[in-house]
Image (cartoon, rainbow, N blue to C red; front, side):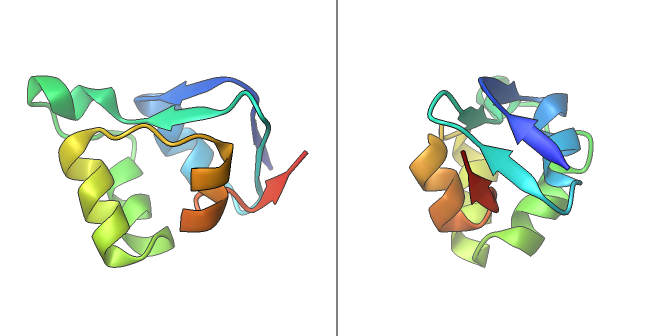
Length: 83
């Protein structure tokens, strides 16, 4: 179980995505900003993004470093529950 109650970026995103139950709140901000400086997402985040999300969403997030709020994480499947 992982709860994202705030900023989830970088290696924290990889740890968050490895959980089977991923809870988000209204304060959740999910992103992989390392791609903006040319680094590859780490901690398995790229693998999970392509497995959990629809393929085009995972690819978009991994290539652009887009930021997702709570509603976006639930819509894409990154979050499984909201509190």
